[in-house]
Image (cartoon, rainbow, N blue to C red; front, side, top):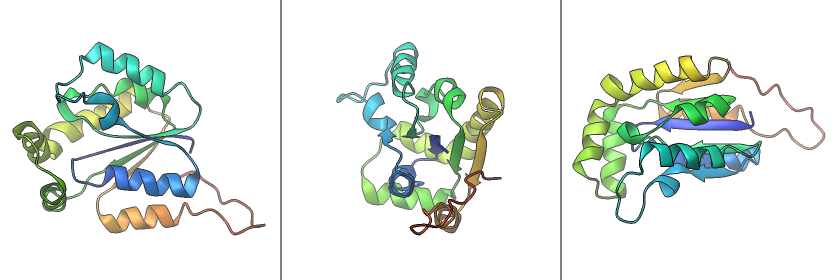
Amino acid sequence: MKRVVVLGRGGAGKSTFARRLAALSGLPVIELDKQFWPPDLTPLPAQQWRAIQHRLIASNEWILDGDLGPFDVLDVRLRAADTIIVLDFAFTICAWRALRRSRENLTFWRWLIGYRRHSLPLITSAIAQHAPEATVRLLRHPRDVERFLSGNRPPPDGAPAPDRRFT
């Protein structure tokens, strides 16, 4: 696990998950929202976003945290990933978290509400097409995140490293 893509509905905790995984793995985190959204919140054109992602995946190790919904171009980072984590939490969990953290626009709420119907099938299809060899983990509840992260803790000093492949 050296090149990790974290996807999921808004409010699922992608950034928090990525930071926690980085603390355990030592991999650097790149928050895609910071790369994609300019100060005026106008979405980047697809070709520009594609070029930025090519630059981001140039290193050998990273965690790319972010799902830009209808504005995203997934193929670049999926092709480069060896591990893909999809946080597919219930709407109520994500909506509550989104309400607590900040004000969001109508486009965000449409994406949040229609995620399982519209975005998740597109993500699933893109993974099958562009990352057939990657390890994919679908985490549907915060307790699944805890289980996943507890299985990725570094071994105590002197202990052999556990097998890092996941099924």
